[in-house]
Length: 234
Image (cartoon, rainbow, N blue to C red; front, top):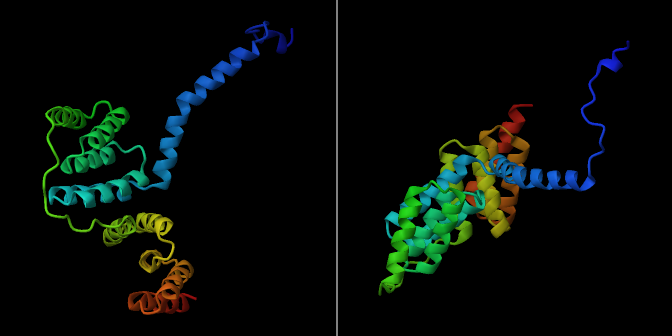
């Protein structure tokens, strides 16, 4: 008797190709959301998301609802599956008495996180306010909202000050997608790269900042510093 003959035969009936196709489709549907979430977590660091949400909350608490919206969108671009980001955006719309937008965003927060009790409470309140026909308040013209690129730069600066250099760079690059000629974004990247000891990258970023804005003294200082440190480490 050979070893091969002792191996049990599990099935001698050929499998239907349609059955395997159906199983593959189910696997894709189940696995894709998990993989997508992991990809975003790898590319969008948690500190960047937290900084944007905190900035949104501070602006909301100060009554600066347009600014809260800007930071909420920064958070959402950092992580499109953030229930907290949708909740903050909904709260900002509610502050502006735009009930339809508030309800739409808070429902998305609940879809992402069904156990989000605060979002459920907010949804009920927004729906009551809409049903009651609560109008938008007559307020003096609000201050100019933070431009989208500027809100990214502010978050980037906060991350740098917190020592979160990789996340600082990530958010600064998001700012560059909105404003490719942002000398401040390149300078933030240069400062973070210098803090990480990545002198070649720091020099390249600082050079771009100076090229865009030759009068940017801070960028010139960062460029000189990176060049000097690179020379010393040779």
